[in-house]
Image 1: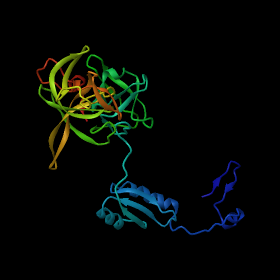
Image 2: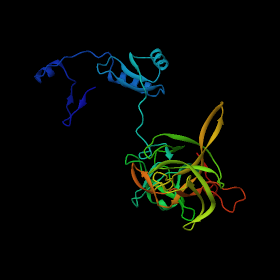
Image 3: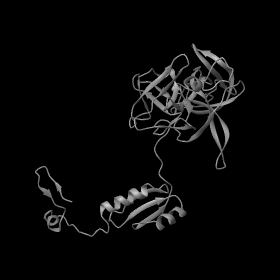
Image 4: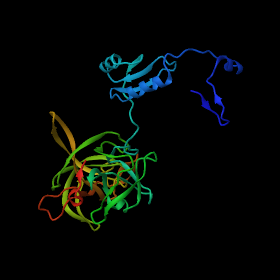
Length: 332
């Protein structure tokens, strides 16, 4: 189809005569398929979950496709509408991790308060007041302040439901984005994750893990007190690494991990019959004692081998309620 220049005259597609005037040797070859035909097939194949990549061949003869298994290769070839060159190789990986989260956002990722310049960690994805939101620490900001999960490629959002006395608040769902019921596991720059299968109450003697975006995942920690007041905030659960010493690398949290998830692991059976290990939400990180050398964002900083966190649940007849009950929220 001809296009128009700013002078209003039609611009013709290249011809041998026009090419000759350039003084550059040009060879014209017929393309078996048009760009529009190739693009339509790229779109069709791209929507197939078996396909990793699909791209037009440069000579217009068909498409180059990648899949993950030989069985997928045979199936895609059998369903082909245009000539395909199908290669078996691993699918590309999305370039996201705790530091650069993307939608659907997970707990344990870094988020930035753009109104103050501070950074904290996301906790658990919840449904509150009919909308998906992200639970995090209240001291990380105030209602109405502008926040962003991940890098500058992600849209801004705002803080809501800030309750300083409980050290909890939520992040609204960014425009055209959402949250998922998963949390990051592994190191501060990890992209591994686990599904959040439910929540549970804290009792003295329980074993827990923490997962902040600055120092990563830490387990082998034990609950020593519940219904605690910390800096005027309550209820808080207190836990510490075992053995409980400020030895280098024995940290459970570091500055910037605030709001990150505290959890344990549980065995879940789903239908159709499937057994999986998933996370049980316990709370969101609030405070610690800065006395322990800790790897945070890849360098040694001062963290804590002890942690206080805001519980998501408390027992039925406890004088306190957890965050989920307080807000009337449920986990995604």
